[in-house]
Picture 1 (spheres, rainbow, N blue to C red):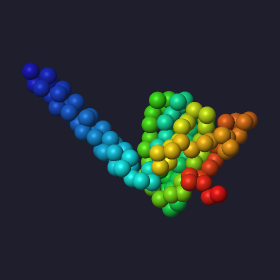
Picture 2: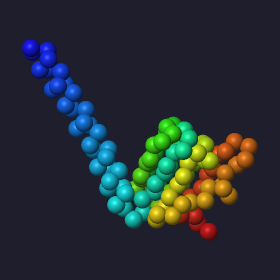
Picture 3: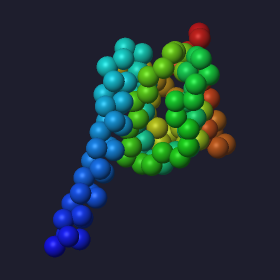
Picture 4: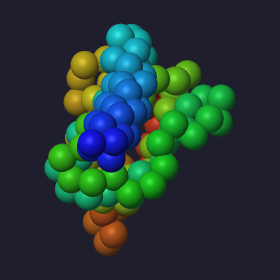
Length: 114
């Protein structure tokens, strides 16, 4: 009976661990300068804010959504740009002009400096 009682106790910390990430996303979504990324395909990304703080770096899986808050402008490097949808201030960011045809990478700042 003792091992059975220990199993639910061991499982209990897992949901608590997920809560801070959800809370962080909720706080980022509430920020007026939040940057939202939806991944239609797996993509490598690196995103920094104006202070040089890395907000996201690595391979993000298809179906994921990331909402990031930092100090704009954001510097984005997307490894599979056609597979990523970027939104800033609720509007889609057109990645087309920044996407290189030969390797589908894109480098840009959001909001753009022009």
